[in-house]
Amino acid sequence: MRKQPIITGEYYHIYNRGVDKRDVFSDKMDIRRFVESINEFNQVDVIGSLINLRKSKNIQKGPKALSEEPLVVIMVYCLNPNHFHFVLKQLEDGGISKFMQKLQSGYTSYFNVKNSRSGSLFQGTFKAQHIGSENYFNKTLGYVNKNYQVHNIPEDKKELVFASDYEYENNNFKIVSKIEGNRILEIFGGVGGFKRHSDEIVEIIRKERGKTSLLEDEELPERA
Image (cartoon, rainbow, N blue to C red; front, side):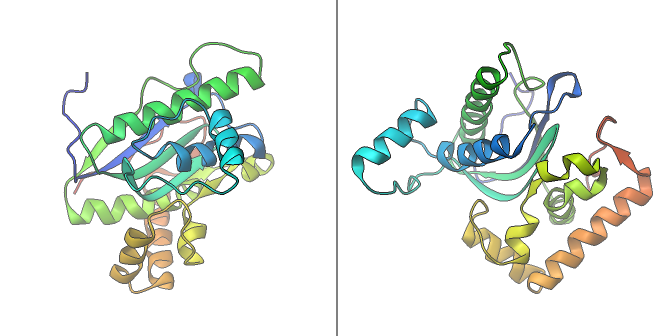
């Protein structure tokens, strides 16, 4: 049980990494599967599996819109080869825990079948840091939005990066909430302003801690 409960209506930095620092994404198919899981599992409705969901969509002969009752609002995100980050706003009691449980367990099942393995894929459930001030909120947004640039990602693994900076820099929100995404752009003075903010946060962090390898423990932004 968590020492501090996750509060509905509040923002949280959510992150986790592969057990023993192993990669959790090995090819683009893994990334696509995880992204599909993010979209489909962010709803109050219970989903047994993505396979069954796809079958039901085919039977309905039309796309199934995301539930009108999402569990969380996604502000920014970054998928790296061996770990991921989100900034989430919880919309209902237990929403973040429900979303992350469905996301991680569903993806672990897929990954284990694909790679003929068993056991845990992630280090525990997930880590959560409450974002309690405007300064810390802004810092964490920039940090997560371009988190892949904090690390020295090997050239052959750069295709295993998927982050929200693309959505913000193209003003084309698919995973990020359109309402919240546009609000963030307005706060930072548009696409260029938020890009500069994210780049500045990454540059500050890299200078403070030196270049960071994916195999090193990641130091998170200090609270304001």
